[in-house]
Amino acid sequence: MDDEDGYFGERVAATYDNPSAREFQPETLDPMADLLAGLAGGGRALELGIGTGRVALPLAERGVPVHGIDLSRAMVARMRDKPGGDAIGVTIGDFATTRVDGTFSVAYLVFNTIMNLTTQAAQVACFRNVAAHLAPGGSFVIETMLPELRKLPPGQDVVPFHVSPTRWSFDVYDVATQEMSSNYVEVADGRGDYWSVPFRYVWPAELDLMAQLAGMRLRDRWAGWRGEPFTGESERHVSVWERPAH
Image (cartoon, rainbow, N blue to C red; front, top):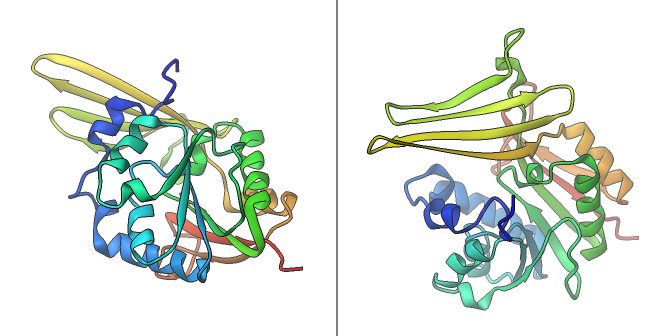
């Protein structure tokens, strides 16, 4: 990937915001912003992968000062065009290693974005970077999917998640390395287009160990932002680790 914005350049930024998608609906964003505002407790929030401000803007509307880190200038430019977007500070860089001034009461990384770090070393570095930014007693929140390996019959490594007459989307898994990719094929006006994004899926227990290496400990884990119980049937999780107060 030669684009300085990584895999989320102008091509993606131009169509990323979809007001009709579930991720942009109030029933999704309101409990998320409420929980994060509660964890901030009057302090500052740090969003890793702030993107177009989908979460940062409603959180800022609740009176929480938000600062973001993002590699994609194109995504951040979209946020700047929205009401209130200019008031949110952003540092351009890799959120696994980029440092910003000050400390924060809560840091968060949502919508599977931890998987954009495609090595275990980078994911560990992210936890350590967050721990360095958190005030004592501060929280780190991750929302991410559980890999859909149960959908793979023997000998298959592909899980489709969208099929239509003009568009096909599918994930490809490598269970030996935990590498995966999301792939998109679209045919319009007789022309085909293909786009692929690499990821590294990560299990909850592995994230807990990364937190421990960074000096944090698990406080809560739910199946969603409303505190739904996390079980063996959950398709995703929202986990909260905290930096000890002492």
